[in-house]
Image (tube, rainbow, N blue to C red):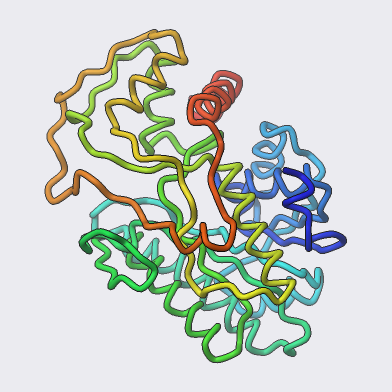
Length: 331
């Protein structure tokens, strides 16, 4: 795995934004473990939290910096200070609520940071512009009918999805106009250590660790998942292809594991944990309009050799172990 991920990235500097967050911390940790030069960027005053997050992932050697990522001037200073070969722009708001208060937060955090980054890149010389990877989400497709291919018309249904889609439009426009050498890597449902327990997998794990039975819907929804370390590796592989001037589509649906129902996933999690609590199926109503089957079609990624192969049970075991060892994260 190490050799495959490093091919094309040797002696390159990778800059990861949002390094105190779930995807950012795990991506920075993987890149550092692979021996890459890594700089992590996050909000002013976040360095102590970033260090704690990285330490929990057995990674304490990432160089950290702070900046206002909604400010183009701050972005320009970052790019000039570090001169990265790759920018993994993983900073942003992940709240998926329907409340009207989510709109300004998502627009500022997701769209605002992307606008600031592209503004800084536009004022840089072409030779100084790094390769850009921007992680999209299956939620951009929203209420669109499956199959969800890269050319599908998206129908986002909350502020988070809409702000991510708006950023995707900006990045892909930058690719078409020659401003960027970039890719939007659209993921199915990512899980793993250090994910906020408002998401299904960590929510169930934390509930079980606290000894609380877990209430959920009937769990008939089928979804595809990808382990966060594998998601990080896939982004690095795409970055390597871009650095090597290999053809990469502006948007790529990233590979994920085979579909599984949410009730089966819940049973698997509790089985790995030794069944400390029970799942109360049907205790919560189904979400209005939620499709039973929802995931991106990853055929295009497979045609260029990108696959997801992490075993689900083993990945869940690693995730559970992290939450057992890091009660500070959800206390």
